[in-house]
Image 1 (cartoon, chains in turn green, orange):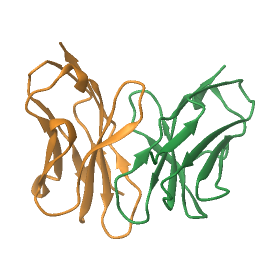
Image 2 (cartoon, rainbow over the protein chains, first blue to last red):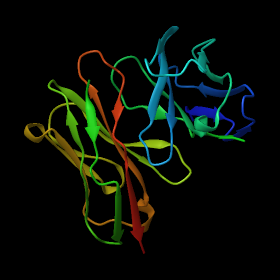
Image 3 (tube, rainbow over the protein chains, first blue to last red):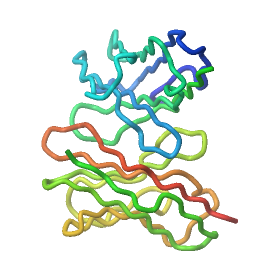
Image 4 (cartoon, rainbow over the protein chains, first blue to last red):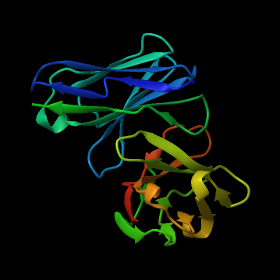
Length: 112
Length: 114
């Protein structure tokens, strides 16, 4: 089935140690998003790609970077994770234009 | 910028009770509206969406929502909840006319007791 796949489901990293989360999609959607979701809070948009065009939210810390080498893959790099970065990270896609978003299952990041 | 308010943060019901979750948005123009559900340990799934037309929208699993433009509301309803409806529910808004970035509400945690 076409879907959005996030790996890994659970990631434990050390304080300050770079970590990369991955997202792949078989939907051929133009737009890919990364959200951060903390407990009992709404998903917070970090950035998104429209094709290769990268769009950073104004309040996304510099510690967070993203790469989209092709249509199917998108990566979230956290250069120096802090304790406050522990959260669920959600990848989502949508075709160009308005539509329902397809979310991946998320990666739960723990920082120790 | 638009915002979305979900006033009920936690709702606890018994099975067969009726459900209504509030969603209000602030935006002066035309909007597209969504409800998502997140079951424990799972990803966000689309329940229903409103783009235009009949303001009463029916979604999956017996859910429906009514868009009331004058009240800037898009409340989610279900006449009789089940234990399996226990989940987090998120309302989202996208302004019409080119935007594709949703604004999510904070979410409502629903617990249904068997």
